[in-house]
Image 1 (cartoon, rainbow, N blue to C red):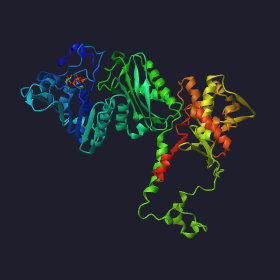
Image 2 (cartoon, protein in one colour; image 1 turned 60 degrees about the vertical axis):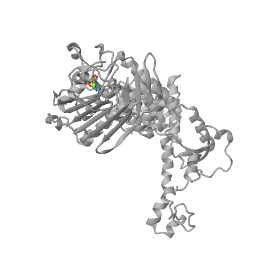
Image 3 (cartoon, rainbow, N blue to C red; image 1 turned 45 degrees about the vertical axis):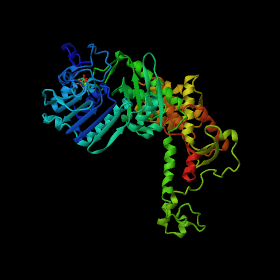
Image 4 (tube, helix red, strand yellow; image 1 turned 180 degrees about the vertical axis):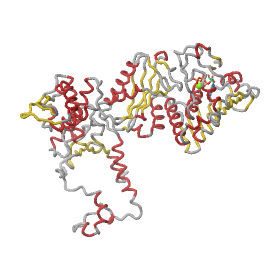
Length: 609
Ligand SMILES: Nc1ncnc2c1ncn2[C@@H]1O[C@H](COP(=O)(O)OP(=O)(O)OP(=O)(O)O)[C@@H](O)[C@H]1O
Ligand SMILES: [Mg+2]
């Protein structure tokens, strides 16, 4: 498609504004051009955080002399053949990027059109320079294929703009983030990013399909993401949704690890935040953010990409539909994988043991090992106190807080084949140790029970409501007046969940009934906790969602607290209930409810494998 000048009418309809704000915007525009030109391999080199040099080389289609000369003119593009701004299928469409860069830097483009490749020596590459807006004539040049764009001394002619740039490091980081996003959107293209201040990043082209997609995401987001990612696949009515989302047990303190791509374009959209929050509401506290990378494909006519000068945002024709499809698809995938807890727990456990192995070098002496049999007179007595203690603490489990006598009998065969195995012991009155066919599992009894209670409360809301138990003597809870107001406004919702409260003077409420499911619960603590959380809930939250919040808080209070001894039957009952409960791999704060250690891991720890 030849490059041509857009008509004034079209130009006026293009989202106006600054195209080049910082070095990272230059990198984004140049790499997008390379992708539009069908490149399979793109190399990016920067110096001085991109301020001194940005060099982008691709093996795409290239340009002939005529197109090259036009390409650096304003509003000249090869990508809008029908002048149809509502049907954009390329990353670029305005013919603004190259002239904008040429206006504020020294721009040199060397390019060789595909048709010249087979035409022998006659047909060579061409070069053009634009410096501070002044364009040189097109000259013959040497290049075997593709296009090489060099941008030097960005903003050299506009010192005021230079002042707004951050340190080279920060600008360099912004460039890396731009390249990361582009690389995530196109696993089939190989990327190299090299800078003067860092080891080069190289991402080989990956296979098509979800495997390749995940491989590239792991390259960019880290191997931990790969190990804990759930595949997302869904959509309908011409909307495709795919991607990967982290299990709720792998989260971050901010939302920077959340990526949305629309028709291959990385976009920032507040919609994504809401989607992720909605989909993970059952699993995560509000201040934790899972990593996700979601790729939406839809008819280009369903989305307007011409709304932001840097093309970083889009507008959906039917945002509500997109949102609900995304939430639905994410939820479905998460509940499918709900039993799975993050592997991070298990492998971190194994890693924690490693130093003990590693230190067992040539000089290892069992007598100095903290694991040596205890001297009957007591190690503390034999050694100077300060020295002996650190070695001891790691192995001193204290007086057993529960019945830790080893079970000598073989575990029942039918139980060890269950997913969570047969309970063998309870330790520290908090953890249940179970045996499975190929390993052992440690269950956090409080976290596990909390999830079970929560799921039951949820099911109860859906059906006939939740059974309540009447308190013989109503519990009076003193609170701030604002808190009392807040609670009373939600009196009805709370009643649906089995908690009956009434006003009791200006600064207090009376609790008359509590959810039977919670058993004997400290009503005061529960109501205080609810009042505190109530302030955080968005007022506009739909009823169902706020009920879930209440249920989550209640579940926490109504659960077997850590520190309660359990009999073997109780432990096994809890395990069986976990197996039957959706999402039982995490408590509703996103912490894992159990960690698993495979026999193979244990064998590795002991050097048997
Ligand atoms: N790396 C490249 N390989 C081949 N052709 C290119 C390359 N870079 C730019 N071009 C050509 O130059 C034209 C102008 O590029 P420019 O980036 O200024 O505008 P655009 O990509 O059409 O639109 P936008 O301003 O939205 O990026 C493109 O339409 C394309 O034809
Ligand atoms: Mg472009």
